Image (tube, rainbow, N blue to C red; front, side, top):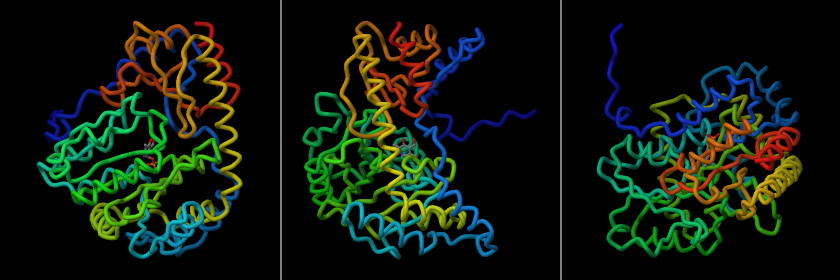
Length: 388
Ligand code: PLP
C-alpha cells in the first residue's frame, strides 16, 4: 500500500501529549484494574427528557429532513437572542449577530479561515484549549503565547504586551470560565481587553463554553458582549454542549460583531451545510425551558467539586476552589512533573487525570480533574486518591 505523506500543516503539529498517558492506561487496564477516568470534560449525565422529546417530534417533520440553511434556522437564532437578553441583558440582532454552529469547536476551528492571513499575529493564552493555536497555524498565523499564571489569577497580563505587539496582532483568543484552570474573569479584565482591542483594531474571540457551569449565584460568569464596545471588536462562542449535556448533538452559536459573524458564516457556507434542523428545534426548547434544569445540574457539580477538593486536601494538595467550569486545577506535589504525578496516580490507583502540560507548556506543574463522573465513581476515585 502506498504510504502518502501528510500535508505540511499536519506533519508539523506538535506530538500528541497524552500518548504516554494512554500507554500507561492500557498497561494498567491489562492488569485488570478498574479504570476511572477523570480525564475528559464530557458530561456523564443524559440530555434532559424535555429536550429529547422535542427532538423526537422535530425528527418526524419531513421539512427537517432536507438541507438546513447555512446560517441556521432564524427561529434558533431568535431563541439565542432571547436567551442572551434574559441571561446577560445583551441585545442581539438574530439576523446579523447570531450564527448556528455544529458545536463551538467547529466555529472556533473555522474562525481563522475567515480572518487570519499567513503571517498574521494571533495571541493565545495557554494553558488552553488547543484548537485556537492549531486552527490559526493551519491558516499560516504566527502564534504568540500570553501565559496564564496563578499569581495573576490565571488572567493574561495585558500590560506585559507592548504597543507594537498589539498594533501587529490580528486577534486574541480568551476563554472564561477557563478550561483548564477553572478561573473566572472579572468585568474589569474584559473592559480592559475590549479597550485595548478597540484602540488597536484587534479581534477578540471569547470562548464562552462554560459560562453556565457556575456554582455561585452571586458571581455569575459574564458574556463578553455585556461589555460596552464589545460589539465593535468581539465574537463570542457559546454552546449547548456542557450546560444541557448535549456534547453529542453538535449545536452551538457564535454571536457578536456582524462582520465577524458574517465572515465565519461565509466559511461555513463553503465548508458545511448547516446543523440538522431537528437538533436546532430541540435546542430552541433547551434554551427556552432549560433554566430549572441548569439549576439542578449546578447543584450536582458543586457537590462533586466539594468531594474532590476534600479528597485532595486530605493528601496535602490545596488548590483554588473553582467557582465555575467542570474542572479542578491543582499543583502537583513537590518533586513531580505533571506527567510523573498523573502517571503515578494512574499506575497506583487506576484513576486517570489530565497532565497540565497537555494544554501547553504553561500548564506544567499542574493536573486537571474533570467532574464529569457520577457520585459513586467519583467517591471511589477520590478514596483511591486519598489512600495514596
Ligand atoms: N471550548 C472549550 C474551552 C472546551 O473545553 C470545549 C470542549 O471541551 C469546547 C470549546 C467545544 O465544545 P463544543 O464543540 O461541544 O461546543
